[in-house]
Amino acid sequence: MKAHIPASARLTRRQKQIVREYDSSIVNENFQRFVKLSIVSLHEKFGFGMTDARTFSERFPNLRKKRKKTKSSGSTAMML
Image (cartoon, rainbow, N blue to C red; front, side, top):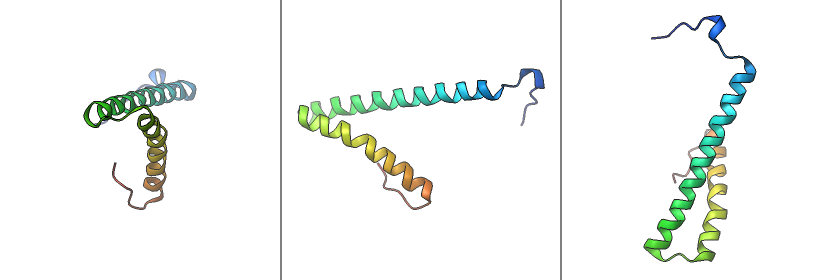
């Protein structure tokens, strides 16, 4: 069901942009939190040291970007 939004209650382009930027920052913040928790888990479970953690934290975002590129190009992407 679609709801009707009166013209007076609609968001302007600038307001929509602000909402998108805020949403993007929240997603990025959550992603960073996930990576940090992953590193802690790898340390506790498998004994990852500082060097291993640094390698993981540097490589993980690159894999995420690579996955986004392959996903947007239409080819099948590697599942993480």
